[in-house]
Length: 133
Picture 1 (cartoon, rainbow, N blue to C red):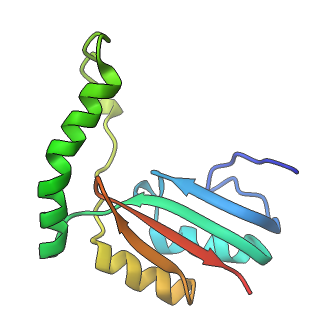
Picture 2 (tube, rainbow, N blue to C red):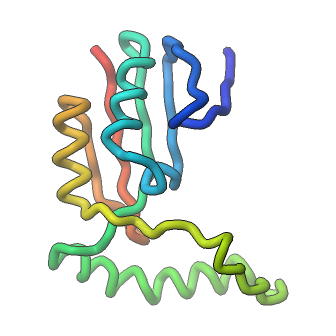
């Protein structure tokens, strides 16, 4: 197996690839353009797996956010017990928040990757899985 780590926008070699994954990154990138690049570089029978973040917009998003907020605090507390509080991040190091709503993500993914399965997940995340025929 060959494993490649590359910049999805400028550095992804032509491929073809049997699997492409993108975890908590695609909301920082031009979504449609990146999915198109992934589609072009994926081998027949290959799979794209994305774990991304979406912007809460629909009522179901806000309901899930209401459930996720206390759970997120509990998980953070459990994972970080006994560790010192993190230092504040400088303004230059902050990243762009997710700006696409779940419906937009599902719609664009369906146009670019027909048959893609896009599912809402807890903590403002979604999964997108597409297998090239």
